[in-house]
Amino acid sequence: MNDFWRRSGKRIFDVSIALILVVMLWPLLLIVTILVRINLGSPILFTQLRLGKDENEFRLYKFRSMLDLYDANGHFQPDEQRLNPFGKFLRSTSIDELPQILNILRGEMSFIGPRATLPAYKDLLLARYPKRFSVLPGITSLPGIRGRNTLSWDEKFTMDVEYVEKFGFRMDLYIFLRTIPVVLGREGISMPGVETTTRYDDERNKTD
Image 1 (cartoon, rainbow, N blue to C red):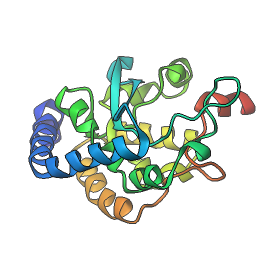
Image 2 (cartoon, rainbow, N blue to C red):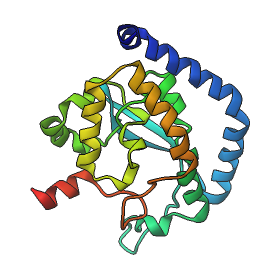
Image 3 (cartoon, rainbow, N blue to C red):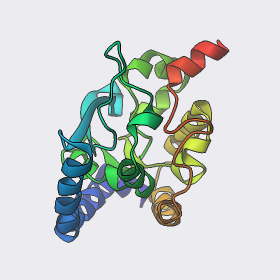
């Protein structure tokens, strides 16, 4: 089963579920698009370069969840000031993640796998956790069901390596089923003490 899952089963599952979700959720996607435009402005989608399988860069898509608010020097204000109640709702319900279905259909992501990271972390991750780049990144992950953003970066990356080493149908099924109560319970949305997350390179600089 695992051999088939590795070769083609997982990709068949990803594409099938992604197409089903597009058909089922298009009214929700349309409504969220309109509400994002009204409450947060444009662009509707937040896009950012991320690292994928084999360290390849791709452009990740999410619904926008923050306002464009700048300080006197033209820099973005802190996340807690840019997140209004609607943006917090999108993040807490994980609705902001839905546009990543497009990344899945394009073959850049899977539903399950290590979370896609910023290119700025590439050298650090290759030195410490190179195995995590041997599979496609995912919308949900092993650390995603074990604490999400309440975990430290290194705890999450260690779990990503564990996922790769135990990769297979049973592991993906386990994560898929456990993700449902985690998302419904809105667990672990933010890192302790911050509204969203810290940067991994900043965290490493403080400890190295």
